[in-house]
Image 1 (tube, helix red, strand yellow):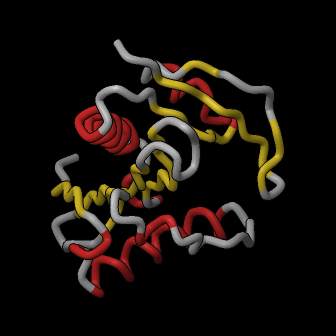
Image 2: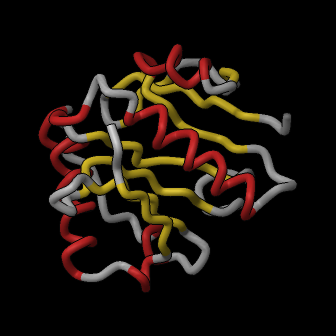
Amino acid sequence: MTLTWLDVGFDQLNVELLYSLLQLRVDVFVVEQNCPYPELDGKDKHVHTRHLLGLNDQQEVVAYSRVLAPNISYPQASIGRVAVAKSVRGQGVANQLMQRAIAIAKQRWPDDHIQIGAQDYLRHFYQQLGFVVNSEVYLEDGIPHLDMLLTHS
């Protein structure tokens, strides 16, 4: 699947893109996963936060991740809010999204490892990308998670 990819800071998001990315995040994390939680946590607006958006031909955000600088969520750089719309799942979009997010983190913070808080059922997916489990499984908002680390290669 061919998407248009944007790597932007918060101040580069226009109202339409912001609405579309928030709608995708809420659809996936709040509605699909039936998990009310504070989706707007202030990290989106941080000066070093990068928003990676995958847009389809209709300019809809169908893939998204947030790439955070070290010391925002973890001591290391981190990737979170990884979301893919139902309409494009199973087409390799999640892999493309994560490869691009990893590249952004490595380019911006080349001396830092990349930490994620992954849902446990996606452990194998992230392991295929090189992440290694570095915590026990824990519950976050009622969903089993674990921390995973991608070290320099």
